[in-house]
Length: 451
Image 1: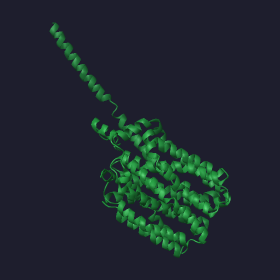
Image 2: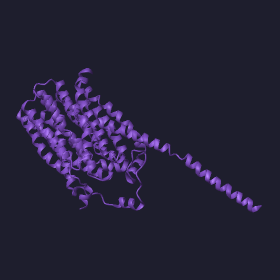
Image 3: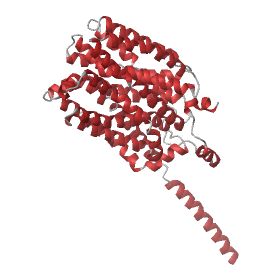
Image 4: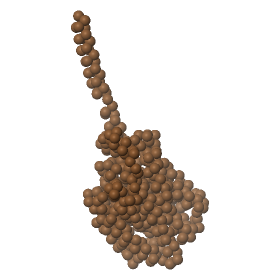
């Protein structure tokens, strides 16, 4: 009897354990977690798009109204050239801080703070009433842009490691759309709002405020965001990449920081980034003025600048996808460079007669920016390597680009025309093409730094 009861108790306990295990399996939150991860992934995509839309309006909206701002604040041509040099200066100074801040707070939290800084800077700068105040508020907005510039490739590599080309294309396309929209809409919107350049510039703060919202959950969950970067890449199918073994994690933590300055590819990419940024910021800051001085109406000049920027919308999606399928990105570099040379030659010889053609060609040439971002993602193996390469290439590159817009302003003021500035822009395309071919070689900075 006792043995029978013991056997019955054993069967009961065993069945209870089986039912409990089945209940745990059935009630495990597997449906909830993928749904949560999928929702989070969609939020990241939305955040990437809205962030990219806000990375250039601070610059191109100013380019469209530069003459009005100069008159309103009493700027000379040299000071206006300094103003157009502020973006690369801020990108160089603040971009280098981005990887360290991302390690401490998480990249999502840093981008959220960057969008808030853009909002505050764009809203304040038109109303501070002095050149110094305008520059200070612009620097605040540009600080937010610099942090987000560096961290966008990191976020793409981390969340979409198997779709770097397509996601970089989406990000670059949204960036080009925001750039072109600000160039095209700022002048007519200013006129519709009463003709005040202050209102025409401040209205872009609203778009930046909207971009803060998708990143707020990542501020609250920044610890998990940091852990994702340490333990593995996020997979867009809702799962996480396989966790590394304890030995691999220890090795990863104890490994010394990548000596990025030992990599020739990193230096080539930094110089390429700097030279394409020089051309881009000269274009954004001065091209509308070049057309206006040639006799083009202010609204049409803004539209021409918008055409240059809007060319990046389709091409910024196509070029990164094409680049990831090629072992060497040199042919794309050369094709974009030739378009730039022809565009500058036309801008010098027939700025009015062929204005739309030159705007199109220079727009194609400016797609060196999404190509450079794609190469940043391709020239490093891990998100940590991409973060370090992105910070180095962008900070060094923007440092290289600082003198360009300022020099254009000085040459314009002292020569009384656009011949010398355009010759400078065309001349810079030659070294840009040379270092771009070197940066496009199929190798990684980890291998070069290890040697």
